[in-house]
Length: 412
Image: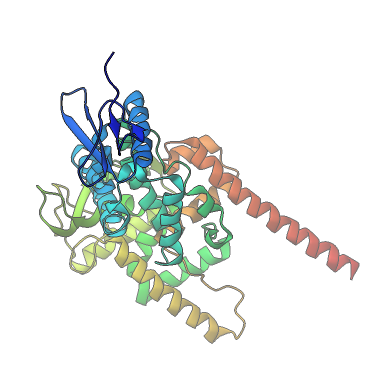
């Protein structure tokens, strides 16, 4: 029988692989399945053996030893190199979110030491200290969750510590964002009637099309005349116009436009034209002819775009949203000139609000949900149903309010 090894003047028995150094500290050596030798050290034999237990558990669960040296940033680099299946603008946004908000601080932590509480604390810091909006933190979470998932798949960690880590923050009363609402019928009528006036008449067609089709902004600004069938009243949506900062190797650096496929497969669709939408296209065509306007934009081989600025270039979403701010200001100023207490004013809204406006009109008209899904280009019908539920709830509350006012009037 082999003699047991003693340490520290015979007070403790050392196990296989353990040893004591001349300075009194302890070490543990072992060989992994690949034949590589590893050593860990500790001043305390008790602490060393706790580490040994962790190593044994990791070995049993298939967790790699090198995980103790791998940071979140290391896994992110691997994820970035291997990630496929994303549109380039989405991928660039993911990289921006991670490299701006995660990499400088949290990303330097060792991936195998991260607990769910650490992820929650990180998200709370983004909200409370850095003042990020819930939507921005959600974007950070989207990419960070994928990075941790890769760490699980590559046997660096057992479970993804970011699972459900954002739920508590989302439920927080501080981060209950207002539900996006569309314009009311009165607000919509005010907007379109104001845009028909001389100063802003060149903006009428694009905003009328957004209001009357529910298209996403890039789908509308990317329309070409060949996508418009005025005779049969059909809009063929088969691509989308995107504008973003290109950072990926192999692309020209900087911010510029690209053509992408629609957001989802269901985004490829045909939308029937309402009469005022058809009229808007005809107005835009007439404007081009009278102004001698020609399309100078050629983007990924696409040209002959419908909506152009005065230089013959396509519109970006930022340009449209800036125009909306000016329209709201001037329209409401005009309303106050007419009356000290206007019945209708334009609220603050964005291009995307016009998509929700169209959805609201569909709900008010009692449109079949499946037809709504097809027109809006939703991949998942649950998206359509959630919007439908929100809008119909608002309509019910409004009708009940009208009923309350009616009975109060009768009682008075």
